[in-house]
Amino acid sequence: MSGRIWMRRAYEPPSRVDGTRVLIDRLWPRGVSRDDLMIDAWLRDVAPSDDLRRWFGHDIDRWEEFRRRYRKELTAVPAAEALEELRGMVAGGRVTLVFAAKDSEHCNVTVLAERLSELLEATG
Image 1 (cartoon, rainbow, N blue to C red):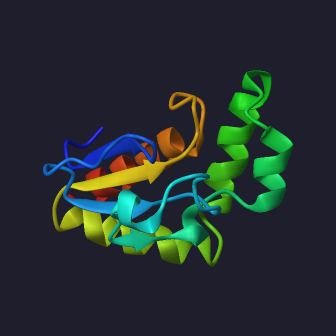
Image 2: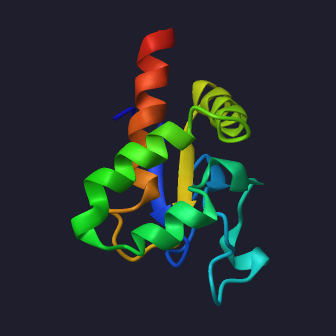
C-alpha cells in the first residue's frame, strides 16, 4: 500500500498529517457533523452501489464475493471516473480515505485503497 494512502474512520478525529481528506462512502456517517468531519471532498460515486452495499451487509462470509463485485463496479462509469479523480489526488500527495464502517478490514476502504495502490504502481 502506498504511503500516500491513509485510512481513517469518520468517528476518529482528523489529524494535521491527514493531507487531503476524502469521504468515500455513499451515505453520510451518522452522528457526525460536516464541521467535525473536516473533509476536502466527498466522492459518493467511488463507493459501492446501494445494491451491493445492501447485499454485503458486512457479512464476512460474503467478503471475497463483495471484493470481486466492488472491483468490477470500479471499472464502470461513474465509479471509474471518481476513481480516476481520486487517483489524481493521491498522485499529488497524501490522501486520507474517510469511511464509517466499524470493521476497517472488511469494508470498501480496503478494496479501494488496494485498487488505488495498483493504479499508482502502474502509472509509476
